[in-house]
Image 1: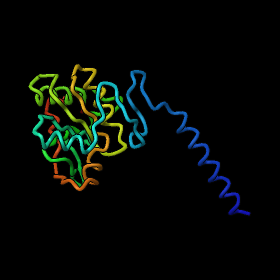
Image 2 (image 1 turned 180 degrees about the vertical axis):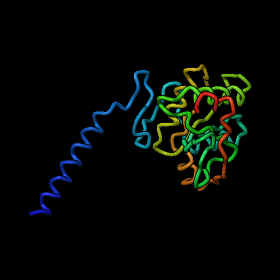
Image 3 (image 1 turned 90 degrees about the vertical axis):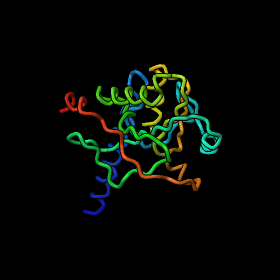
Length: 188
C-alpha cells in the first residue's frame, strides 16, 4: 500500500509539473523565445532564411563570402567563459555565446552588436549564417535580433554543428570571442 501511495504521489507531481511547464510563456512580448531553448524549432525565422547543410556547404565551396557565427550558449562567470568540454564547431566560425537569449542582458546585446559590426565592416548586406546546435532556439533568436538591427542577408542554419557533424563534415575546436573589459563594468 505504501508503494501505491508513493507511485500516486509521483504521478501527481509529474502531472502538476507538466501542467505548470505548459502554462509558462515560451515567447517574450517582442517575439523572442524565452524558455525551453532546447526543443523542436520551426522551419522559418523572421528576417532570415533557413539554410540546409548541403546549401551552406555549397556556398562555402563556391567561395561565397559568408560569415559563420556560432551562438551556442556557455557558462560565463566572473568575466570568464567556462566551456567544458571545449566547443567543436564549423571551421572558420566565430563563437559569440549567449547572444541568443530571448531576454538578453544589455552587455550581451552590445557584445553581439559590436561583433556583428566588426565582422561585416558595418556592411549590413553581408551574408551571415547563424547557428548553434540542432533544436536550439538561441540561433533563431539571434537571427531575429540581427534582422531587427537591419542586417539583410541572414541565414539560419538550424541543424547547426550537430547537422554538420552528422553529414560527416569536420568540426574544429573553438574559443569564444572575449566579452571585453568594458562589459565587466556593467555586469559585476
